[in-house]
Structure formats: structure tokens, C-alpha cells
Image 1 (cartoon, rainbow, N blue to C red):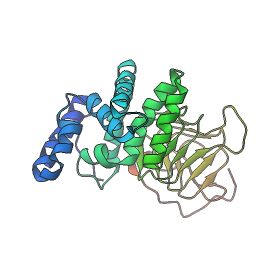
Image 2: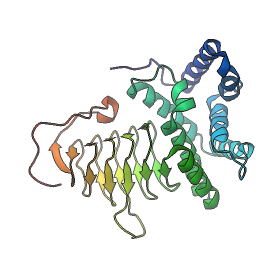
Image 3: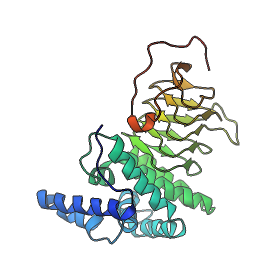
Image 4: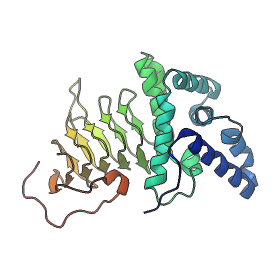
Length: 273
């Protein structure tokens, strides 16, 4: 399986990103100014990430400099946000065979960028700055077609492949090392208030167009097949598919989010979960 060789520490990730930017600037002089502004002029990942989020989300209502100040305040108060971004970059490097360097997700992949901006929005939500958090959410949705409520809790090492059409509700929880494709919904089942959204365990793979609805648990290392509608809990390590979703394999792949293996077993169980 394709994998970029990156040592799992922040200096190495930042070093890899800078080296890739330097090489790209030499190979494509038309982008040298952009690469310098976004990456090469900064001293660490936090500074570059704050600049990247700001240049994407800044507009006439909330200037890029202000967005960057908010990001840097969030990073200072909660260093885990930057650590999560590093883990997300590692996840893309490990799971996406299309990328050549970390430069691609950092500059161009809307799944990665939406995640990082959403982490800042979640920090604002926790500081009771709900109006600004909603502003971030709105801009993220407009720019990336990914709608993540600022109240949602997101783990690290996440991979949003393609990203378009992903919706994550307010009380949803997404564990570490999860992979999800475009069109995934982690939603509610009605107009009820309170804790109403799914809880996704560690290492889960959510296929394209999968809908997980209600305050239900998808167990660690489970797999939800593309196009499935999940309305009941999914056991740890199992695969579900269909509308409504049924068990098709249990146990499944030991690490489906890492292998990105979307294949299904030949034998389908005859009961609904």
C-alpha cells in the first residue's frame, strides 16, 4: 500500500512540508510567491496553518488578519489543535494513494482545510463565542461544501476524502483515526433537541454517501458501506451495508480506516441490526 515516509513528530512533518514547498517553487515559478506566503515565510506549522485558514476564510466581513489572530489564540490556548492537524496530514499521507507530498492536502484538499478551520470553530464554541463560531461554520460550508457544526467533537488523524457534501451535527462525536468519504451524514432523526447525533468510534471507515442517523454508536474499527443508512448501533469491528443497514461481515478488516478497503463479504446476514 502507498505510504509517504514521514517520521511521526511535528518537526519532521513541518520539515517535509517546507521541503516540498521549496521543490515546488523551483519547479513551478508561477506559484513561488504563493508558496512563500503560505509556507516558506513561516517558522512552524502553527504559523503556516493560521495563515492558510485565514486566507481561505477571510472576507469583507471578517478580514484575514482577524481570522489569523483568532486561529493563533486558539492554537496558543489549545496546542492539541495543531497536533491534530499534524495527525490529519499523516492520515492523508498514509491513506490517499493519489498524493505525492504533504503540500497537496495542506494547500488544496478541502477535507483537510475544513477540518482545521472547524477545530478553531469548536474552540470558539467552547469559549462561548457562539456567534463567531457560527460565522466560521458558515464560511467553511460556503467554501468547501462541508458542514460541520462547531459543537461537534472531532478526534485526530482524520481523513475526509474528497469531502464534498459531508454533514456533521452538533452533538456528533468522531473518534481518532476515522476515514470518511464524500456525502457522509452524521445527523439526527427529527426535530428533537439534546444529544441526538451519532458517536463514531476509533478507526471507523464511512463510505461515500453513508448516512448514520440518531444518537447511536458505531463501534471501533467498524465499516459502513457506501450508500448505507444506519439507524441502529453497529458492533465493534463489524461491517454494515444497505438501506436499512444490515450486518454483512463480523469481524471485518482490523483497521478499515487505514486500509480504505471498501469491499464487502459475499455472505450477507439475514437480520437487521
